Length: 157
Image (cartoon, rainbow, N blue to C red; front, side, top):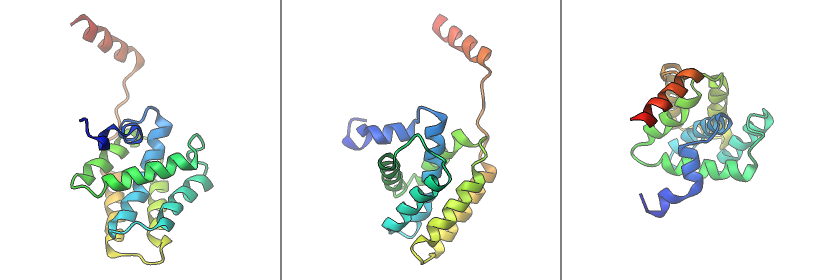
């Protein structure tokens, strides 16, 4: 993938976050972005609400506002593509064991109301998010000894 769209370091980092904190921030942002793009017009007030929500609850203190805005813009753009459901699932899956679902749902509802016009597609996006948070397969943790054994086997082959 050599085109400029896939070589953007922000998108690469979002697609494969390097830490659990980054993954949790991406999950929160994807919830807001999903609702924001549902009515086909992302309002700046919706994007601002995502950042305000994250800041007010201290959910991503390690990321500055500029980084969160860039993450929102990149994910919102990806959500306009035909494989948007995969983007949402892959962003939420790594943090499925974290207690984020109440934050995800509250954030999605606040974004829907941010522009003072709750569109029916935004309501559908919230319902989809609720279903995903309930049904998403839980992230599997690998015990430290097992991961080391697997790495040793891989290097021996």
